Length: 632
Image (cartoon, rainbow, N blue to C red; front, side, top):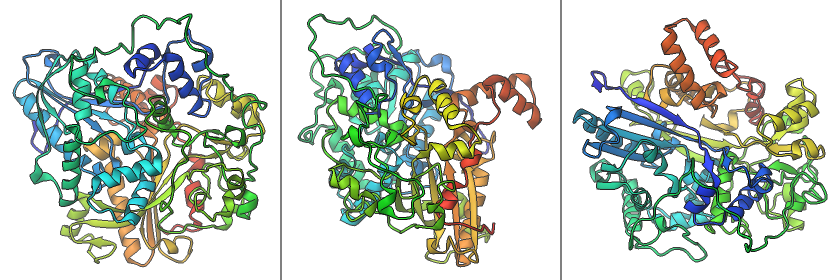
């Protein structure tokens, strides 16, 4: 179970979300037709079958799934008498990978793993259920905007005010789907948890409502908490007791969020069960506006001229949903997190009529504009003006403001401090030296971070891939299960926000030197490899490359330049985690060892391709930063 060197052996399961819509609606205490409508309308018209095909009850939402790490004897998991530890853990990448103290995520994760090992060594099993729902499922751009607002409001340790600030900026403080968090436990046949590692009352009630008995809950010991996290821990504990009333306008529609009085509500099945019958006397709903018809949707899209030199003539990308007649883009913001927002609207946690209040969320540094922004073919996979659209005096948004249309940033730029043990080691061994600003004692690396949502200019994307644009649009529509029919019916809409993960740029040093061809500049284009980076697996060299890249970035910054880590979320060569795990199994059985060529052929056999990363687009973030020369 635990070997010398700290090696923990476990079984891992990657799970894609598969929703049984009648059961999902019952779980959320919603009318199924109303839920389908909100999922369609508030994802920018994704999957019209949601509202046109009531006979199709299964929905695979384009959101991130979860991974279960099982430590110990998995055969004991359904045994109510065997020791079982469970940690339901939500992604917090800044803390877990880079060691930021802005979140206690890594502390909880490591403590949970320790408890899992103890349960396994006692003859049972321990589970880490790792859910990819960054920033309370609000998405990374939203999280960075909130960081800026909090920094400017100087709220310090007042966590309740910080949560209110999150709601002001994003429309909700938290849109995680707590009602569904017990499903992976039921899949494993669990009826009793001996130790539940959590401080979340919502998760505890959700698990109990699923009919699972919890013997005890344990919290992160106070001795492990940094001073900055104590106030947050106290707030969460008080909230879990129900000390704080729900905000005005919120509607906790599930008993999982309400009183503990009364018997637990049995869970609705998500993968099987009877269909929700259509009632003859059901109330009529208003007309559904299909996004594929110009007479009904994007009737008068606001002009946007990709590559225009003047902000006023360029115009803002309008992918918000409050004024659909003026939208000039296909899709909507927040990528895979748009589904969470749609569910939040259906549950009346979010008021869709209230524009987001983006005051004080402006970038902490100014990037651009640069000549590459004015070349329609130079940058095609992100909106170079995406960080500037929300400023009150932005000429980019003049036309939108004149019509009362809200626009939303697709880029957020914030400050960040990384604390990685390898950097501490590099200081101790003399590979790096602290300077008090860029790198401080204790291995603290100060940097600027930018979160970027993908925004595709389809004509430019087609030219970049050397494809006919009409053919590209057709393949994007057909091979995503019919997502966004406007791709093939609205050639006049040239902007597409694909519901895929974006990227984060970590900038170490003086960002003003980045476009200077004579200033030292280090760049690492890095692709996500979660098992290696977060859990230290030797199946990939991802973390080694990442740490080495950060060391080089620090050296460039200390030499008067800058270093960049461009971190792209494209797990498993962009084939996805389930595919990656299937390939791992095939490789293990074929006993290919270190023959990389054979392993690549095995990947292609299992998944259809060895690698589908979009290399043609990887220079776009560099051009956004005005780069013309990379030294290292």
